[in-house]
Length: 113
Length: 110
Image (tube, rainbow over all chains, first blue to last red):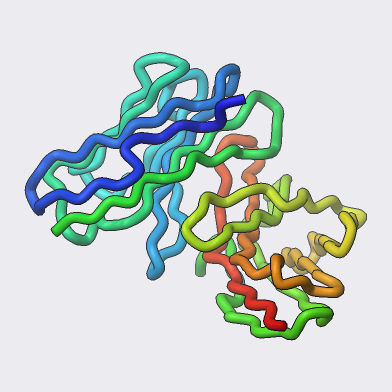
């Protein structure tokens, strides 16, 4: 079974550029989560979707960040414009209805120069 | 105050040792509790759920104290392969939002 798929795995970009991170959740899972992990702040929940609808985006740092889930099998997290302090590992996770366990993707390691 | 707090460690223990991690949470209405494990440069993975009566999975024992809003994880007979970061996780009453602690790093040495 394919797990959560994220792309790209690594992204290096320059300050001011637009960055788009992609996620394909596990088929049949109806909750999707975007997290950011840094040494300083640990694992932070940015936004989560249920049945493709954003439920809570209070973790999104600022207007430069946006997330979409156009269908059950795809989500994007966009940063525009990117800044060096956005450098982190971004994880996507999914979970099925009523289940406890979240399954994480391998993450995207973002470096903004 | 953070919603979920853990001692960041690191804990450095010899093989065969017993080690315990603690975690506190601020929302008394929280319903579900878990421990996740994260290896270096990898994604977090579920280690075990935490039940009110306490539960055990091999060398791992998890306990919950709702009155004190406290969760613990005990690892007996530590192995080198136990070296990782252990994340305390709390799920809110609505069932959607999951909050991760910052994690406790464990190093098991030969």
